[in-house]
Image (cartoon, rainbow, N blue to C red):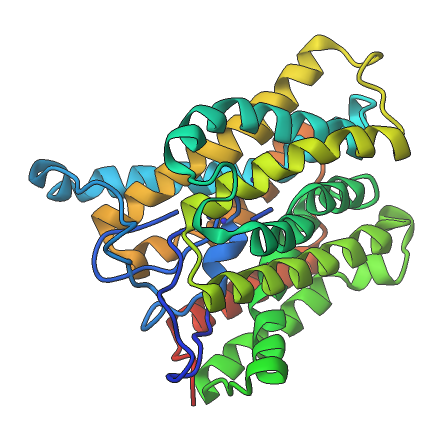
Length: 358
């Protein structure tokens, strides 16, 4: 709406600078798009490296000497990503379907990105990615991702998506990297991942038990687990291919647009009945703020503070969601959910700081 693994030495490639996230200044950075989830796929000690060919324009020295600006950018990016789950949940209250939000999300983002893509992407709209890779990545994080995310919001409270998906992405990435690449996580990192799993399990206990206050929420939780699997596969493919994060952002968004009529054909669409204010909210927030502005903010936070310090803003996302959900939607987490969230955030911090490889 933001990799703890790196490839083995023989197959490691230049990481992209870019889900459901941004670039940095030296050293090289691995970062993916449109989601705080992506920053949880990297380990700061090695995969936060900037490819000199795709790093952003250097900031003026005066700006580099203002750490408060980096903190402001990082906090604001985390706030945008945290509120994204609340905005998705609000679409349910506004009578909008997952297809409605998906159409608005990609249509609005495409309007912003097309002028930049026309100048940057040669050939248009896939650039150096090539058609095969761009289509594969679009299949993973294009309309499918949005439909699952908003579909989950129909069943589970907003906080569930901000705890379960970001928490399980590093866990799923570790499993996929071990299964596909033969990578082994360090003891410290395994400890962090174990704490995350325990936290998510505790957090989802009431939903899985189908308690009266969380009736049907387990369906949403399962969809958020699927989101974690999709983002993990996406992150590993981007890193293996050395994909430019900006090109990934543009290509997956623009290639999603031709799929929107198919989404409208096979899924219920209620845009004609939705209020203009509800349509504007989803288009502006999902397409513009999450898809473009938060990406820019996090990029600047990494450039000013460094990748490792900027990554520490990401565990703020579920905290922001909890506060925004309570204030805007009246959704208050139970004591068990608060304890599970705290445990999951602790695991994220441990895993962020740990070495990736044994």
